[in-house]
Image 1 (cartoon, rainbow, N blue to C red):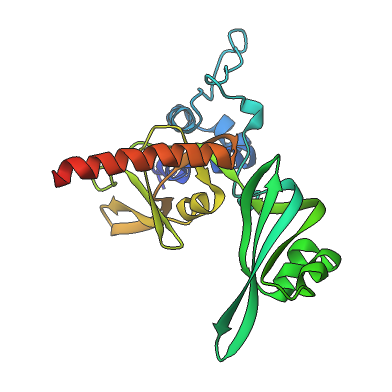
Image 2: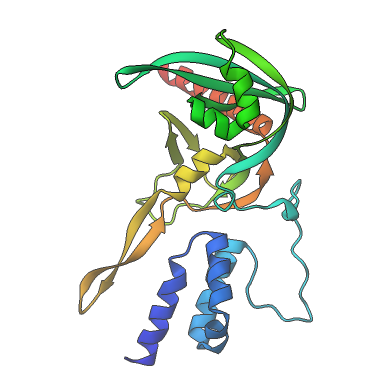
Length: 269
């Protein structure tokens, strides 16, 4: 195989990568290959690195300056939602519960919805938990306090460190081609969020999980083999800026819903 073809195959490996944490992992595993590669490969990798991370891969050591955090952001707060399973751990001082009787299959079962008090504010925790799942979330002792109650709602007080859905500020990449939708649309549990690209936005972890799982096949045109699948690319690539809060998400969503209502009102006349 010609050296140019070998270089092109190498380039295709990292050009498919659209997430920063994946690119950094690839670079760590292939650092020696990149260092010993041709100028064409090094230039292509530097371009891809700059595109995904915002900073050049190759810099003269005498002129390197640490990248400054974006306005209002702290780069040390950046985390990877996927590695955290899109969850975060919060401390609650009170757990409010509601018992619902639902038919599951042919049997009636008791399911529980949980809300908690965190820093003086109420936020949802989990919904539709059966007794076993309730015990796994709260532990045997605290779950039994709820299970033995005869009423359909109540609360327990104490100190509870629970793993709940997290929130992150992200920014979605611009359109790569005309076939990419103008806006990002993420659907989870019947609710669709419409998100503008290249704008910082706070999202719940489970919507970010939807973005991570939205992929499409990637093909190249080869003179000898024709159209050839070379991998899978992410439909909605994004960069994580920092971990955020539910209050920030609610504020942004409220503003976004207001804009959409006003837009629909203008269209409807």
